Image 1 (cartoon, rainbow, N blue to C red):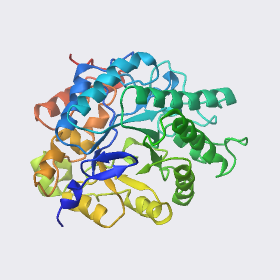
Image 2: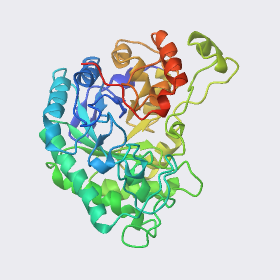
Image 3: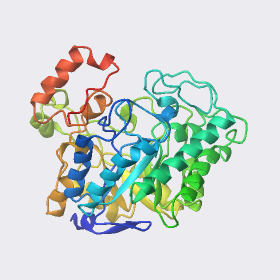
Length: 406
């Protein structure tokens, strides 16, 4: 199948993207570890993506409130002191005619910051971190909603082209939408409709905080990776409610997670030959894992909700990307890990590259989140030795961030 459809322009609300390939929000661990301020290497990473013709860039999750910080080294949008760095970021992307959305996030009970005071709808341990929680008060819930709105205003002031609300992967919005983590019996929970209320309040507050016509989108956790969790039927109905409240697009992803691989499957499209090329000895006798693993959820959304659909999740060949778009299952394809290994991948595709991307979905990049700046650990190959040395020395047991070099 021809990949020409990948290079066609497309729109998300009032934003026009030069092609249908989006850099999915990717945690970088490259901001100043304690303050969340932008650094020069982080700015350079985004400028490189824009220079290599990525249609739209979604930032890594920007924490909207100090209690919502996921890890040290995460970029903040929680304070006006962040504005100079964020403005420099958008300026560098726009220098290359790029489009960039600020991803607004609150980690909720999934925060991994030592000494932080996480927030959760109910006193339920987080399925991923095991954090024991207390029930959020009405005032704390309103404070979180206000923080999202304030972050959206900062995104506008910093020159972003849109905002992307993080409502997936076990973070606070997901915790309110899931029957596993939302056990409340007040206006914020107790039924599927009441579990709409927190994300609905966030969308309304964000929409009110930005100018008319400014693109507002959301990454939605459609299905939980835990027993008794959120099901696709409830999420599709909820998506319709949120689109009615002002969302311009929905990115399809997973909800509550028990492991990082629930949102980022490993060894997608990696067969024996690809395993041999990249020294994946343990995969030499294994079948490739399937691509586009969230696609059935995008199909369910498309069937019932009239909105722009962004599909993320394990697309590792240009043929699959193009087929997803040609079928109408999604309007844009989003990639995270492939653009870590090949920041110029979109430029290559625009120039005619077809076939499999280089990323093997080994997830070493994710394992080092909160420990090292974002990078591919398979190339150059010396990084595999560095990874092994860090692991054997107990580095992953230490809650520290290796500072980004300026």
